[in-house]
Image (cartoon, rainbow, N blue to C red):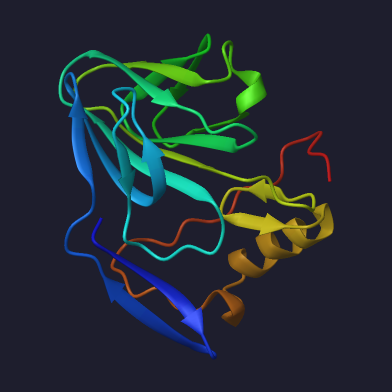
Length: 184
């Protein structure tokens, strides 16, 4: 990843980041995409990317079968998004396109988390300070309440202009219905 964008004064500004902090721990390559991070060896890295709150984002790539240990910041909420392969952690297995969401207090020692994966697995490790308000997430939608999520599903599936046009040759995927029992 070498670019990011943010909105300012109702226009999008793009910033190019030609070099992001990169290091290896054993057979695992890590790229810090945002925030700051102190690795298990005690080295501290800071990404040049713009952020507006305390957070961390690390692209983690397993070059061989093995494990990675990631340090946790006290009080943060975290997510591990598996983009290739599958990862095992804390007794759970997350497969490609799944998100494992947790708080530092959900982890056995609450200071670090161990990930086990096969060669070629790639995950995005993201974390930050919890938001002050409740946030619901489903598929590609984030909202304050269930009704907003339901409306987003309808709007997306009907091509509402609020989602803009995606310039791609790929087929637009329909948004799935909320699962039974979704709390909002």
